[in-house]
Length: 163
Ligand SMILES: [Fe+2]
Ligand SMILES: [Fe+2]
Image (tube, rainbow, N blue to C red; front, side):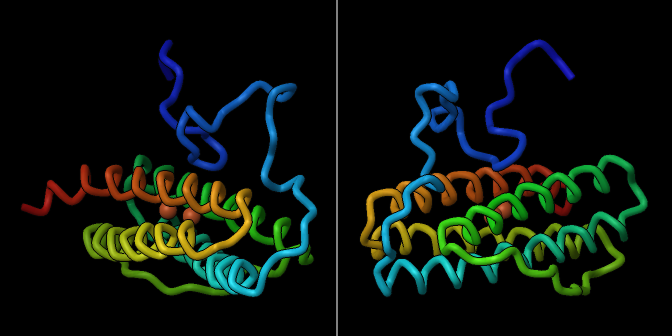
């Protein structure tokens, strides 16, 4: 709670530069163009990572004893799920089922796993923003990369307690 606007979209984690009034918005999900082979491959790999991340963060949320961390991991799970839903839409696929994930009972282990996952995602999306061919897919990956970089920043705040 507070009076200032959040720095990121609460649903997808996009930074404010991506947030437009509905009337001015040009949502990437509304582009119906046929995808190139490389963009399709990039989006399928992203979909897998985002669905895995959703299940992992849901697990971490359920394991934490602290309410603040339960909420933090739950929020991450929701944001990653929105990323997965966007991939389904761009790929023109039906929404699939979430898989099962395992995670530690110890919050600090889960912070480290979160850092590794977000670091991998950020690097992957930086690459995908370059290699994807269509403009709307490049924009999607650029936004996604920033959202995941902000998750690293978020988790770094918790990891500092480990030093
Ligand atoms: Fe994500
Ligand atoms: Fe993330």
